[in-house]
Amino acid sequence: MIIKEKTSLDSLGSFVKVVVDIEREILSANCELHVDCGEELMKEGSLYTNLWGANVYPKDKKIDFISLMNVRPADNNRSMDIEDRAIRKKIEDIIKALVF
Image (cartoon, rainbow, N blue to C red; front, side, top):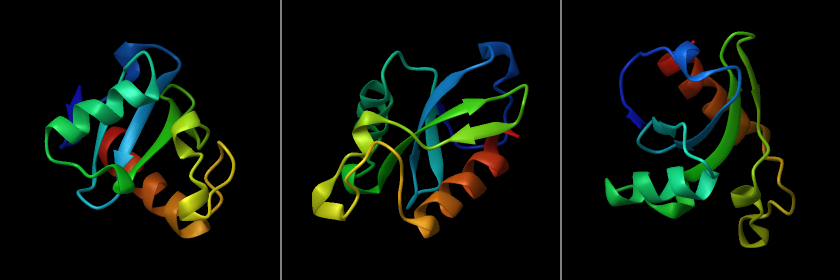
């Protein structure tokens, strides 16, 4: 499900995988794998370089920034966790604007 406007993820459970397009400021949620959410966004015109995976805990209003798709040595991100604080902040802001 692609989310472009304020919505709630509460009905999806206590843990939801999301992929955020930091350029278009939209996200895809509730896919089995982060890569599936990424593919959904790319079909709608997103570029892979702008996509980052995260996990949302709607009831606790928590976010973690861990996803296999975040491993990008070419983008200076060598772990599943997003290391760049500016990217993390942008993702957090987009998630808060759209689903919290």
